[in-house]
Length: 211
Image (cartoon, rainbow, N blue to C red; front, top):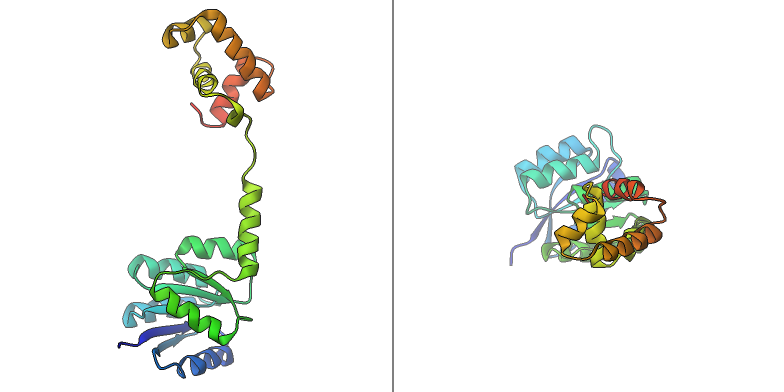
């Protein structure tokens, strides 16, 4: 059975050596390269084409995020596991968006890192619990309630037409409904959106890209 070819990227020599020494005790893993910065990581990855890369984030001469993005562009099959000391949102999301599969902290147990490598070959992600918590918190904070989500399908349809500058009569003609029905819907729309008139409703429609 072919060994999993691993590359380790970290700017701290002792950390890098320690990781490599442990990985080399695993029968099915082979450390094929070591790099101490992002730029070197890209060059080495393109040359060695490893199966998995353990990637630090904060390094001189090319960050882990930049290196991850460049490597994934050229070698999409290479799986990259972030292994860092940082759980800052400013690093987590850019790293994952750049193409990293997993995100681990250097406080992880050695066997957890090995397991993440094995899972990476199966394209299965491992996210450090503290990192996962931050991701969920950000997702919840970004899921804000928008007033137009309370509109019925018909009311949303009419809001779009208001945004297009249609009069009540034009809306009635287009939807084949009575003018009184349109006025009722418009009244409900203004109430649900919390706006004073149809002009502000139109502005709301454009601001939320409904038109």
